[in-house]
Length: 541
Ligand code: ADP
Ligand code: MG
Picture 1 (tube, helix red, strand yellow):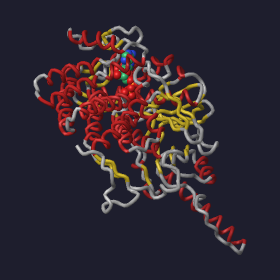
Picture 2 (picture 1 turned 30 degrees about the vertical axis):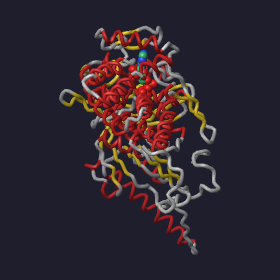
Picture 3 (picture 1 turned 90 degrees about the horizontal axis):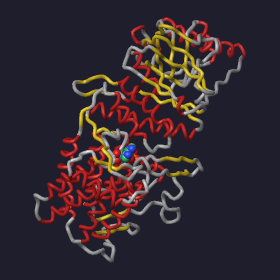
Picture 4 (picture 1 turned 45 degrees about the vertical axis):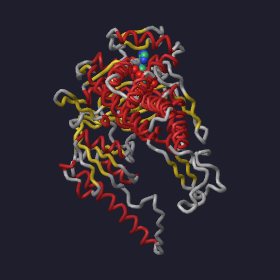
């Protein structure tokens, strides 16, 4: 290992480039990554604390959600950023386990640091970590148990676990049942497992009312009302057209001016415009459509003409909703009205306008295509609704992940301790320095139960000693009872999580830790405006 070089290589790099090499680079990178882990670790688990995030405009978010916190922190240090990215990937791909991934990565790095201090080469550590990770994954697969679409009790326990500590305690059971109903409504069996199209589940927010009044609407809810009050408020046996072009001639977003000198020409121009709109509406009507969803604007005259034809039209429908409507009704989204043939249309049992809170929306029910479900999230304030939405997303993600992998484990630190045991047993078969690395990995797993205990205000040493004793006696699911500080059977307590959340969190943690450990040279190019401007990130973007 080289000592930090006192001088900059003068010819290789431009003057404002900074360079840190060797042990110093590792120390700084590990320290930065651990700071990120420390920032979120107090939020882990059912007794985790919340963070209040204030953005540059003064908007406030109060949350317990690892990835939200990291995103809002706008971290700049490159290695710390890698941890944030791991959390974001975990969130995107499995939807939960983000804090766990980051906390595990931080601990793997902390333990690696001690080995580095003992002059163990990073290559040895990363190899040891990778070998250990393989055994860890096997251990997780061994203890996991099967779960199927019919297992509603297991599934709602998974949903409940996903939502613990999210500040929606009083409504947790109700929201969990909504999450399970939504996920199972869009799931279909695929051999032993299930396929779940999470995009078929839509969460719509409504401020006003209580969390317990949140409900599931079977069908697709779109937060738009009919474009013209003359249109029908409800259409049964609807034939649905989806278009992503405007039903207007002048695009109000484009500032075009036409100079007309002769008043007769103006009339001619207006007549022509009206004629074109009439033709457009005629095309829609000729296709047989009774409901029209338009992604763009619809001219008031066109709206009026559609209303006269008895066609219900929603304008400026969001792209995501257009896609959902296409999947759910079987309609094809067309860009050219000429393509609006009867076979491009989809169907819905009914399309009805609904007043939800202060908002007027429209729901499509009786959908033939992929099943769709909408959860209407109600709550007293914007903050409550937003946090409930995040909690529901986690719950839906976890229930889906459990259905997709078909495997579930109990939590509360139990699986991490089983992994630690398996990896320790593997370490015993090794010799030399690799064994130290494998052991360091096993020890790092304990950070999960330890943090759960710490966050609950318990003595982590006592709790860990008891837990390890229980696992030693063969109690696979022995976990932390955060209310009593005693050992509980996490399976019997219903603290359940999909296997894939655990396997992915572990894999991500190992990946980012080994990536960071292998860096021994950080070359940072000077920022174009670094001389006078404020450092990036200080005032946001
Ligand atoms: P993440 O972002 O990693 O999902 P969470 O804050 O959701 O972080 O905490 C997840 C951890 O909390 C898991 O280890 C899980 O097993 C544990 N946990 C959840 N509910 C309970 C509970 N009731 N008792 C003990 N541990 C729990
Ligand atoms: Mg979670």
